[in-house]
Length: 330
Image (cartoon, rainbow, N blue to C red; front, side, top):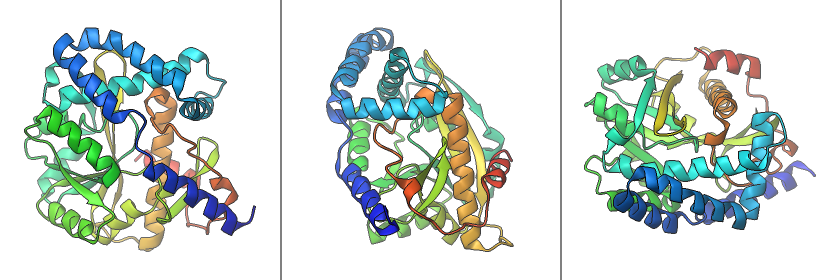
């Protein structure tokens, strides 16, 4: 397959994923609201097995994607219970969103790694980008805001996802729900800039590419995959620090939040902005891979994530994976 054909195939798959609503998300949301509010979390978790079993049985494409991912993350052929656990962990994080948006933090046990970094950024008063992934729960960020009252968050996302999240926040009647900034509009960058100037943190999920948006090919779990350049380019253009953030579900009612500094574009780079952006993307992917291996059942991209990215030739980015891994541990 030549480069143009591979690029076209990748764009087609990405566009199809962008148009597709996450399977059962609205229905699952309604069920979770009823179970959680009327039966309580312990009993709701037991009944969640039925919902996870339905998804596991009647979503063959998602089941194949889960198997492919787990094979890479676990380093072995996943057993049926591994694949079911992947689905069940996903369903659990959706259930827990209801408690998080209602600020019912007492039902969850949350630990935080990297809190001094967030405190330092808050003291600067200039805001920062928080780059997450479809890894664990981003909504658990509310627990950090509870301990750091000055931390205010806005979420930038594409409208097809923003509508689902807005529905969730509305159903939960969250008092301090983050502002949603719909991407894909000219005004989005201006609103992001305004939020940062107000000292807010702007959260984005950076592990999915969309249509023909600029992307970088990086080795991920042993095979090349495309990751969007847009979030990191935006941070560089606005001269903002970028922090990797994830809220990992560790079983039961336990979540572990992690913050790691990816890049600080407020400081000039000797290598130049373009190279610094590419290096930061590689550090992001290295961290994502680290947590996919340590907490493999927390990554929730149930589709053909790689979709031929290794058949597309990308220009050199001026940084090796060795350098990226070393930078990620800083």
